[in-house]
Length: 213
Image (tube, rainbow, N blue to C red; front, side, top):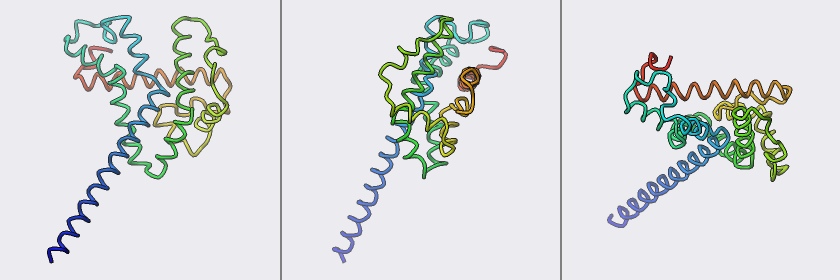
């Protein structure tokens, strides 16, 4: 009887240990997809660029409408770590909704699409700030054909439509659009994502709409 009980305890312990290891692997994969999604759309990095230029950003229009604590809270929410945390919540929801696709989606982002798209996004941001066209040869230096293939798969393959929505890319780089259309839709998508993230930050920090509208 004692021997049977001992075996039962061992089996239960092994089961708990296996579940803990599986959960740890899942959390690591979620962190990796979050890293890739943030690399693809480095919104936190862009926000920090604006924050560096103005200590009252993003509430510089009505600085007296908020407290110092609220301003600090909003800026933290919009920092790179803050944006990463917010994006991770979206990735967790995505993983729960698409468990059968998650591993394949992560492989695609890892294979170069996230890195290349992140370069293009930052190139567009820098160009908008300077008013000068981006030097494409410099921007794309070192990019491999495999990265381009990965990017084209992400932006055009219907199987990855849900992944595009989660990353924030959406259909802004649809292959059936002209370069001018892609640039316009990319700007609109970036503006929409930035506005959404800012409003989320305001909500998290109890900043009323009257302070920023």
